[in-house]
Length: 285
Ligand SMILES: [Zn+2]
Image 1 (cartoon, protein in one colour):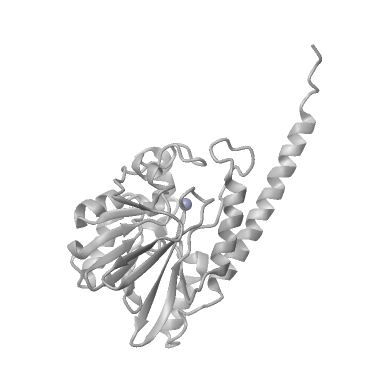
Image 2 (tube, helix red, strand yellow):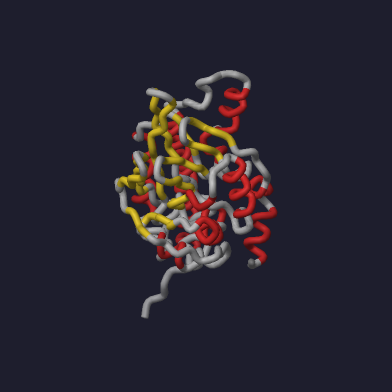
């Protein structure tokens, strides 16, 4: 593991911090470390894991799954939200240990397969063990497993194949839309003049609109803080039975993310303009 990756993990201790697994709603369970939303969704004919944490998180995730009484080999699919090291870093190990097939967005599959290298923003700074993608999905595709339907919405920008996964979980006859909102942040990203990702502005705009419009009763996220998840869990534990439900959560996240993005873009445009002004005039031939 390169020093840049080691530092990234050391600087974010919640990504490897233990968290007792628990039921979120119906057939949906939290199985990640404290700081990374990793979800187990069970179905009649097999289970689905969404995301894989940083390199080294596999033992923690697997112990959480076993704690719930689930056999690792019952996991049929491992889905990915996006191909960054904090969400895909242990996917190769998890796929190996469970025998599950990895399913990812067609636009992120190459980044997973090449081990996170040559990322349009991060270059080679945060590599992961390469992940074999058994099956790819495109925007709006629905996966069926034993009565469970999972829909993949492409929400590109953060990565080219960044995906928002949605499904319905029921308790008795009460069914809710669960949404694992794809990251809409652009931390330190080059938003203009990036030859590795010329369509990035258009993609982010599309994704803000998609996430804001989704049916969304229980918002979840690869980083739980994106949707105030732990605040809602704390209220739930104090006896507020509906505290996990927040039908405004997806829209609120999209709005906040869009505002941060626009601030960042204005600054980058101003910086680019002042750099151009400082450039000496091109002398005539
Ligand atoms: Zn990311």
